[in-house]
Amino acid sequence: MSQPQMVLDYMNENGSITSMEAFDKLGVTRLSQQILILRRRGIDIASIWETGLNRYGATTRYVRYKKV
Image (tube, rainbow, N blue to C red; front, side):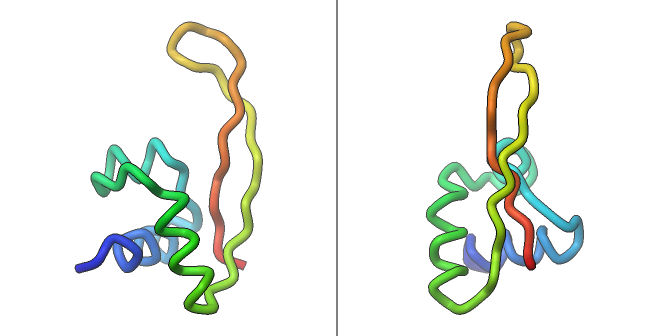
């Protein structure tokens, strides 16, 4: 199965995906590239910026991708 298809299947099953989830669950290291491929195939995917804490307790921002 291709990485874009794995990402799409994950979003269909879980509602959304982040880079950490893609790496941890799917072994995908370049999630933004897979999202770009899916968007070029006509799949509508929103980018939602979120804020969280990194492993050192510092505030960080990351993107959660969600099918629209």
